[in-house]
Length: 256
Image (cartoon, rainbow, N blue to C red; front, top):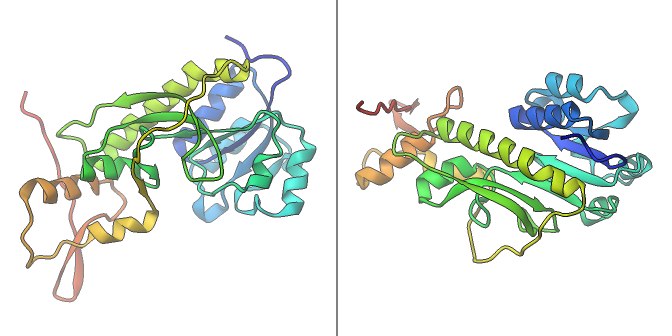
């Protein structure tokens, strides 16, 4: 299936999922007219994204500067119809969203309204909330906009933060492939998020990462934290001994 003629896309993304989403758009002939890329210290798979975008420097902007009126004017001059955000680490201002006549879509690796914000792979394990992938319209909140489509992902007993993250990456990419043609054609469904859900900031990990050796834990709760925070090379959970932090990772094997 080829891209719908005339639909211009401004792409904002990071990490493996951002790269592969952009690559899929380019493979199907989508008209990607601009790119917002994380600054170097926050960039993952940046070289691959740049090579895939095949855009001149004047059509590439720093994602950290999207609230700058001068940058917003640069983006507006590209005359994109719609924006697509994939693992963008910045909250988009209403005046930026207003640039795009057909709005801005976000691909979020969680089953909204659960796990809005950061590290949904961790919190689905630690809090036992449903996991999955969601495509939604961006509004003024954080992952609170109307849902276009979503798909659930099983959280297995042997999953770690890393293995669940990889599952969510692939589920998200599959959801984009299945749903983007309808978005592009202007036929995307739209429904409000229902229920309270859950939300987390990146710093929320600080309240679970330190294991107190003198505290009693329910075995399930401690194991869930340890496996959720097992994602090398990230350091994850730790305890203190001899004035040092000792980091813990777990290995989980399923009996055949």
